[in-house]
Length: 272
Image 1 (spheres, one colour):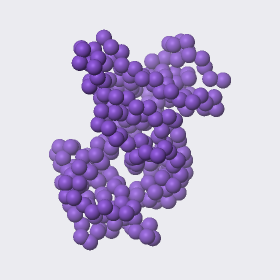
Image 2 (cartoon, helix red, strand yellow):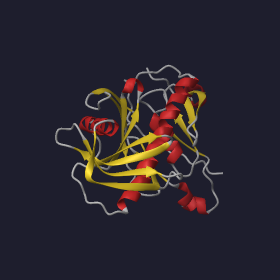
Image 3 (cartoon, helix red, strand yellow):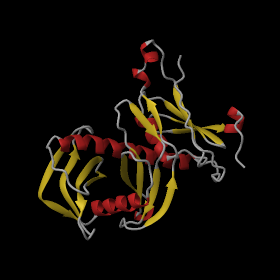
């Protein structure tokens, strides 16, 4: 039996503040956000394929924004106008009964949105203006938060089919209209690449992947993108999250299980 592991090598940060052990309800909130992020990412991926099949023209400043409506995802492709008070939609892709399939509608002239898509597009622009990352592609996703606010996730985009990424990501809390940054949460530091073990030489020799793991030093709770990673990385195996104080197991269905204190499980030193 092969134990597939990956250690997230992050720069030490003793300034990280300890969070109290989360409740079951708190872990479920992380699970739900991670699941929604996974759905958002999949909707963006499959809808982009559907739109590209129509061979659209490149639009300067263009982006996509997704939202879930009646259990189905809709993704709008367009751009903000110069006044940033309208989102001009050129294509809108809607999921069919099969989540991987999207029907696409083209708008000529572009349809003007002044509601959900506009706020989400502005929120992405606001987050990107604050984000500082590596010289590489990143994805942006917008999810609803409490009190009408918006969460914007900026995370590294995969550029190879068999390579999965964790780290280098940030979650921003933005005002309901998308114009004001209200909170910044750095989720992980360094970007770590995990290759699909099923395509490795060891897998061909009959070895199997049992689980993965990485260290998390910025907080003592799993992050939304930890759930996203466990749900999308191949092969689908559980991911152990080891923080300074606590250890968790995140499963491919997004559920999070608390395993115990890291010091007792691994002799890990507690942060000061």
